[in-house]
Length: 265
Image 1 (tube, rainbow, N blue to C red):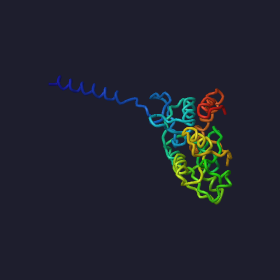
Image 2 (image 1 turned 45 degrees about the vertical axis):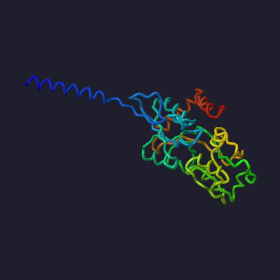
Image 3 (image 1 turned 90 degrees about the vertical axis):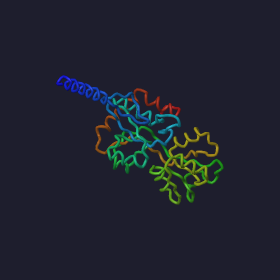
Image 4 (image 1 turned 180 degrees about the horizontal axis):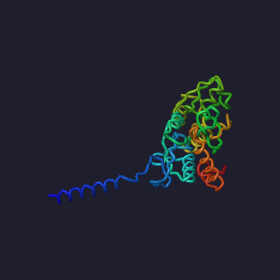
């Protein structure tokens, strides 16, 4: 009887040991996250609004997030020795997510400006952009930003394009969730123009093969994009800046730039 109890107890111990072994060593992942992960690797949690081609977007049928920002942050994470986990968050929810420590950094075509600097730290600039305008091909009354007075203009909510157009005065501004929503509104004659970052406007026209719209050459502003971090995380800021510097020195940054914009910076 004692031998039977001993065998039962031994079997239970073996089963428990096997169960514990089966539960160990899990690694985190999410849609759009990669970097040759291992269970012991540190994870850089990245927030991005995945609706801003060619910087961040997701093609139908593809699992990973695509774009200049996505390739760059993966390269930065690799240089730092981190796995990269990318979360898709609406643009106006990115800074709150950072402040709540749900993410470590933001890369999302985010312009460095004084207002944002009150709430976050920025990396060194990694891209210079500028605001341009798209109108319908048959539009004859809009040739410059000064012609927007009395017109309806679509912009993405929470962006610097929204702020800049409002400052023009006399413009009816329609704030929409994504650049794609803005272009649809333009095609549907709901607005007279779309104001957005130049690479986004150019990419839309190029990729869509759209013949019913045209981009105007005039730039409203020149803007630097930066990677945002929590206000108190100067250590991470230094690491990101050092990784970005190395990528520019070793040519990796230029390779990524050429992939998405067709020429070296």
